[in-house]
Length: 117
Length: 114
Image (tube, each protein chain N blue to C red):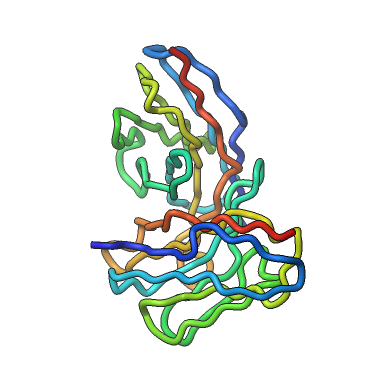
């Protein structure tokens, strides 16, 4: 079974500064990787995903993530954050060979991004 | 296009009471699931369904029942609520084939058990 580790529970940053949210996964097989964002009192929205191909994935709102197979990482980055990026961010991994093909994702514990003015 | 709709949004229960959280989706998705979200724990899968009439347990199924009589609906039942079930509950769905990799979440149901 796969697991996901988000190394930082909280990341404070000033507006317009760059940010990186770290995500590591454990799996011996090929996986699909996702980042979701949760704004206060809302459900989760898909930010970006890696299925195959280019290891640099671009998502919505200027976010991007890089898949590193050797380090089993999928870190999320944004070169310049805005106050409106304040939210909870979840990394998720899905094993396409498991669970009878249901592709059930396993979520990390989340990283709270706090953008200060 | 409503997407995934959960009701109620907020609920307070007394220990031992029963209730049902409703979830409906209008996207004809085969896969539906229920998660609970607790501080510092992320999302944990309670139950899931890969189609009408088919359900299975997730990571934390104890204390919860589900059924899937139609493609659209996937209710979550708490038969005898306990304070440990105080949480935020999310219903999610996704389609098959070309849309399998995008999960749609409802807006959540905040449940407090006193």
